[in-house]
Image 1 (tube, rainbow, N blue to C red):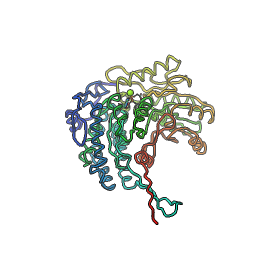
Image 2: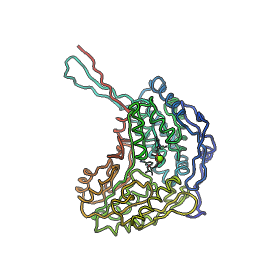
Image 3: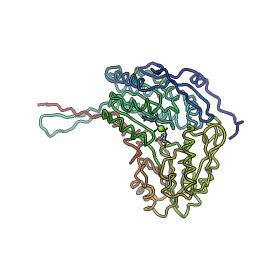
Image 4: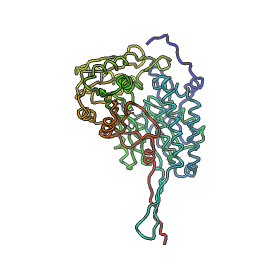
Length: 497
Ligand code: NAI
Ligand code: MG
């Protein structure tokens, strides 16, 4: 890190946006929190305050749910045609695209990720997701059902589930908002969205574009605040029909309990400890580069991070050396500096969590082939790290670290690697690197994971369903599958004799 690097020129609208008051979006209007309370959001590259944000809690959640309820039950949204809903979502995508650099800068300031990454990944993927979902608005259909009870005609209606509470994390703040809002709006639901307290800014700016696009008031309400207050109130609210959550497995379990009061529907996208498997018959150079990206993308703050690198014994040293060399090449620095590859972790809390895992790994006998330390100075930086000499019982091998920390583990044959790979409470994703097509597909079918990447990693597409096996979650995001989670089926039976 150097203090002299030049910085990306800040967009004028970003400067204005940071200065303006940050309120809650309720019923189409920007309002203060009922309590009058605010909280600060910080730049993780410096630790400095970026903006002050109205802090929503239970009372604001209740106001927002009432607005969403009205918009769903009796507002213009409930009478809007699917085509018009689709057009609004498409318009939102266009607006977001027009403000691409602005959103990428907001994301970099609030989350820490490199501007160069946010503008080619986070923002375009969000635009794409909205466009994909805009198309679905006119294609959510029921079925006609042949009945065996004579003289009756049966059909199904696929209807929106109603008012949806959505709680999202800080690792991809804008993209997670898009993944959640897109299907809800396409199916005709209304929403109360609670962004993460670490990164509320891009969701608030998106709220401005949602109003500019012309969505009726109350369709999307945005209430920043803390998990234990605003989040918990949303998960427990009796007039919310569904809660969609992305975050830790620990909080996912709390959401399930809170939802049980009114048995609201629940979908969860939770943690992972994803195995990434390299066979000796792989394209080794591609596997090394891909495995480094699998763990270090977004500083390891990905639920899908390929955090357990399982390497066939005979190429173990070669692959570890290769990935360690990639790790050492990564330029760690502020996200606004144009030559930065990896920015800071999102918060001081995450930095100490990740450093705690490093200490525990070393105390249990692990060795660092690269990295292993936090970076001194302001900001929450940690070195890209590759650990060897681990065993499956170590915390660093079992628990989600959510930082740029890889454990490398050797294996002898496909049966052994399958059992190691599946030996986790999680089942979100997995990677396979091999030139043997048969082996790749066989393994893909036997890995207990919601996504399997073959000779690639962390490839996301709005059309491809995404979600977890085991304790990585319930339900799927994106693709056609997500529409099922935002709709319910009504059977209609008509006497026709
Ligand atoms: P978290 O699960 O506490 O936070 C995620 C969201 O849930 C935030 O919006 C937060 O305000 C909200 N929340 C927290 N407690 C809540 C409650 N009781 N009721 C309702 N909402 C609540 O995650 P946190 O503390 O930021 O990170 C801790 C660990 O969680 C990370 O180290 C990582 O392992 C994991 N994580 C996983 C993510 C994923 O994408 N699967 C994303 C973020 C964190
Ligand atoms: Mg938490």
